[in-house]
Amino acid sequence: MAFASPSFYSTKSDERKVYRYERSPFTSVSMSALNYQATDRIVSLSKPKLRKDTTVRDGFSRYISNPKYSGVTPTAARANCSSRLNELALPVKRHQNYRYELPLPRHVPDGALKYEASPRINELAVPKKLS
Image (cartoon, rainbow, N blue to C red; front, side, top):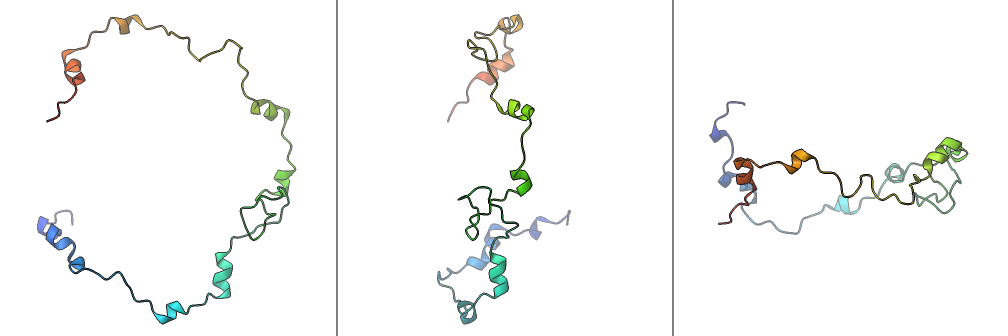
């Protein structure tokens, strides 16, 4: 397959022989498909899986069939945060005069101030001409 000749691959004229004739927008649906009734097993599989009933958040539900189910386990609902976690949850306190991480205006290195662009850099800096 690695050394296949170019004639092996289809050409533009061969690509869409299937669509040579315009297809009708109407398709026929069999009567058995129209009269299909879902079995109890299909109906049960179509519903979301409910794990355990928890009444952690009243009124919240990802599942319409059981509005009290919130997805939070009872153990997680009873968990208490440590003082360190509460401390880390607070935003960082900045000094009242704090503005940015770096001072403005920032110091520019001497090497950057003395830089001279090479001819190639100048050539690349010129925008392309539209024709």
